[in-house]
Image 1 (cartoon, rainbow, N blue to C red):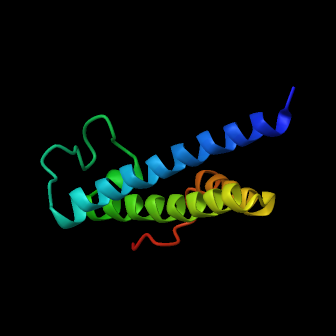
Image 2: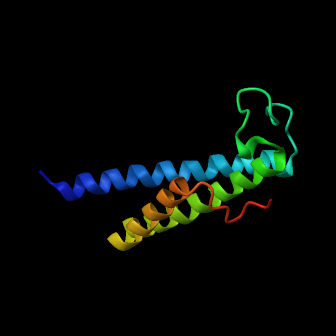
Length: 113
């Protein structure tokens, strides 16, 4: 069994998922911050998102989406570069960026408070 082929497939699927996350979060940022379409979002202390810090208002939510999109862009760029250059270091750096963005949710690099 060719393990390198299986590992390359798994990394490619991960890169596609992270790239889709980038586009989805960037669309959310554009929708909230630029177009100001906030009617469909339950911001505030009521509703299904009560108590979640990023859903307090539209500004915090849009900056959270911007942060997620920038981290996922950086991660996907490193992973795609690692796939095409066949360098495991770039792939690992991209994976570490994504893990850190989920492990350290209170590390507000871009969120303005």
